[in-house]
Amino acid sequence: MVFSMFSTALRRARLWSIEGDGARCRVCERRCFIQVGRRGICGNYINVDGIVYHLGYGRISAIESRPIEIKPLFHYWPNSTALTFSSWGCNFYCPWCQNHYLSFRIPSIEDTVIPPEEFLRKAILNGDEGFSASFNEPTVNFDYLVDLAELALKEGLYFMVVTNGYLTIDAIDMLLKLNVDGWSIDIKGCPKMKRALVNIDHSIVYRNAKYIADRGGHVEMVYLVIPNTNDFNECIEWIIDSHISYLGHSTPLHINRYYPAHKWREPPTSIERLRQIAEKARSEGIEYIYIGNVGDPQLESTKCPKCGKMLIYRHSYRVWEFNLDRDGDRYRCPRCGYTIPIKGRYIPWKTTYI
Image (tube, rainbow, N blue to C red; front, side):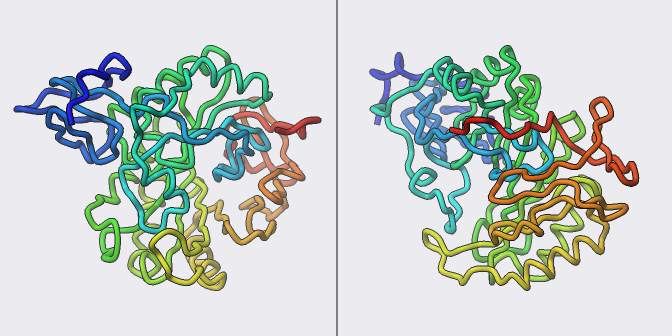
């Protein structure tokens, strides 16, 4: 299908190059080769007469003000709220996706476009501290993220993404320069995984996480443990070893429970298996380990790795107790003085919450 007649309604993409009789998208590491009239695998980037346009630009599928802890980010702007939004499509198409009604639907030229300026006004009216690109893969809405992040930076609002981490370095650089500094990165699996996502180079996710962290970005890794898929011992060991070698011991690791969704019908992950993985990660020296999607505050709260004092008590994705001393831009355990990595400010409870 030729979209020449719609070219005035599209946004020219930033990251692509001419290649042969088509174009190469350079937003994510799939690096789709897109022929004229065709889209890339995510459905958001299209070649119109030799030029790549972002068809999905600003075509928003959901908007909601949400706690930062639900992302999950536990060491980034604690107890703040972010105006959270999503677009359409994805570059992975996980068969267990809980948001498949967003991720498996590609954008249409008929979808309404919400300008980034309108988003900025809504965040300010809500009293949100920042923005979160979530629900579906933010990478597919890259050019919109860039424009919105530029506005957020000028207004002093933070910007974070919940992502599979499969961006190119060029795309990451553009976002980091605009202070997109919060990254909740999903670990889908490992090189020996055979049942799904076998064409993904999972090491790229860790390469990117390290690249972001080395340049001042805040990273937390999220491992959704799926029975009979990515929960075998070799995969667990690869994830823990990669986490330590790429990110060190102080980067938080969220070990989350899976529930059946979309096309995947494996039973929910047993809590005992989650605890086993957490204990192994802890024995290897990872300091901040959380077990999520089980509703147990004790498993989602932060204790001092040195003395064991309860520092941040979380319940229902909110901070109920924040027991840390602030020393400039650093937070410390009030009992032993151990430095606790926190990016941004702790936000006390608000009188109103949207």
